[in-house]
Length: 454
Image (cartoon, rainbow, N blue to C red; front, side, top):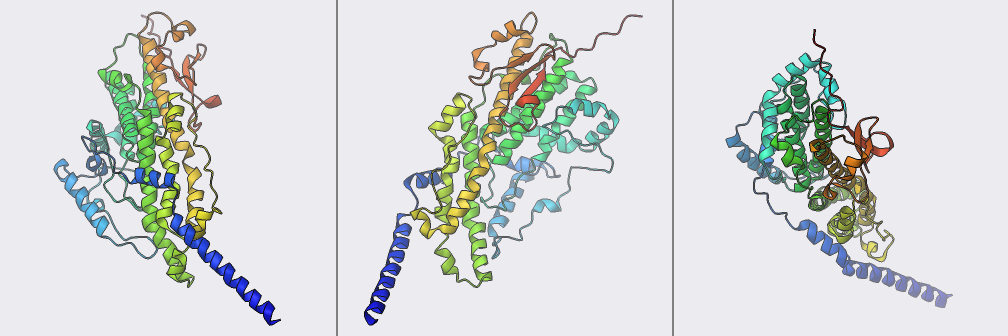
């Protein structure tokens, strides 16, 4: 019996030593080399734009003179960095913008601003022209500030990347389309055409600069809404009606899609990694205290740095060769499933982090598709403008002559002469027409016939 107990004790000691040894080895091995390389790519600061418009965008909805915008943002950043995080990862930071007058004026009974993903903005505004005139007049200064943002090259967020990081008011940009539709409804066709093309270019800029995921998604929505509105306006104008130079600039070159997708996903990766290193880390520690678990015990199973490294390839993939190849061929942008398990040997010393990383990874699949669709919409309207400039009818023969540079190797244009539309397949179906297509009317296809002479 004594011999058996000694054997049992020895076996237990060996088992404990094996577990400890496995844990120590897992800790020593750390993140995979590919994960470390991906995290280093995320942590590399992006090159600053030549003309940084963040301060102008951040303050666009408030009555702050241009000379004071940069200094206000600098003070906001200083106060944000100096505000400590609570034990649960939250902070009591408040923005100085709350103390400044707002330029956005809302009244009961105001008509709704146009939705960038809706195709009925022009009809919506025509149905309540006087109500929209009042809405636009009351918000004229905010819209002027939004329109002035076209001259900037990017809007990188200077706040530290955390889950509570303040975001600029992109909403003011989305309201410009309502003003464009109203101007066209009021007979200001040339001004409206220039506005729509300028806002398409603004959407392109947001995608290409890739300063944030939300900024790129707003950019994709601006491309969709304003390109749709431009085509609708051209459908009501003669084909010989001259286009403003802003339209040539907006549709005259391909989107730098590889650059935009890469930068956008790296920006989101920095944001997520920052959250893991700050708020999530603090929340895990607070949870341990609430459950009367020593903080050191939780740290044995959660390493925020290794968790960030495990998530980093999810974002870095969009800058790699496989993603570039899919974008070049206009194939559905889809990262391969990660070949990993939270039961892997390396997860012995970061079990909580592995679970967190693997839960969050699939959430980014749709965003690349939306940027691809923005590019497809730009190509479709660029082809529409090319067809508009040609002599003769817009038919299948004319479509065959569209320059190769405007075509997709995977998504051919869909011409419907009966409906009078030109369309393209879209990968992200929300806001699309039937069968996952995005159709726009052909030039002069909705031209109103002249009234008969008395």
